[in-house]
Length: 404
Image (tube, rainbow, N blue to C red; front, side, top):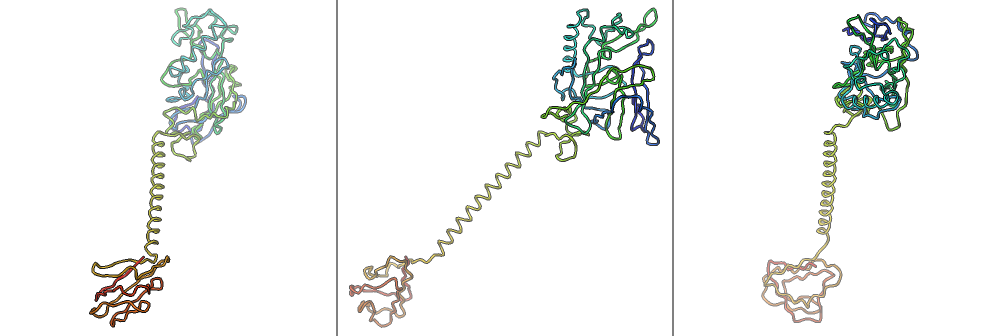
């Protein structure tokens, strides 16, 4: 049992029931750490090692259920649904409570298995509002059929081991919990179905009864072990086993919807150091946006590189030697005078230094005899000596050039 104290960070409790009318349920606080002192008297009150399950939230004793079964067989229910919006260990609640879909699955399977053993039960036997006071429901009757009915198994995450779970077996005598009913003749010891339908999962006294419990708020965990050496002499018939989850499973898959964004176990920030990381819808939008930006940057870089390459090629072509032809309309030159070789030509220039007075005939291999003219040609452009009568008219102040 846990005492809600503003100073309490760790408490150790023992919860066992009496099979005696008038004292059906007993809770015993065995130890308490208040920050000022630490008292432990409970080492002798449990058998086996204490197994710890991690807490999901700082404020409440929210835990993580990984599986639920009936009669030793898993129901195969979605563990995220079981923990949505939350699952809480609460010694102040008498029953187990589950969301509608989980509750219906548990009750349906219990009915199926119980009715295979006996037909002498009605649907009210599975109703948490109906009390059973027959001899079969007498808590003092050790021969009751109750003790042969299938039990419930609830598995919890193991602290520090995301691939393991601890399974608590809850026998039928805890599911149909003892209760004292006042009658006209006094009080009667009866039983009532201890599973209810609720908005979220509650693990009340039906779960905690017969267990040694350590509420360790300082380390954000709850420890469980089977109770023994109980002061009231009651022996617990519950059992705790450690199981390994399948390779593809992890208790992170069971975190409830309301705890996925931020909790003691989970975060939406990668590499936060918490056991579980969950993708949020907006993360996909961010990733798509980043991919599009990268693709756009690559495309821009590629086209920029192609453009630069093309500009360099054009500049290289412009820097190569060339021969231009730039004749004025009134410049006259017989093309037969020029025999251009197949090799690239340099510039051919005729410069006029004095005003022309006559037509300059070409003689003696192309050497002008008219005074005042200079005819310059490159080695790749030569005059044809067979043509001597073609006139060349030089215009003063102009340059006649040829460029191939």
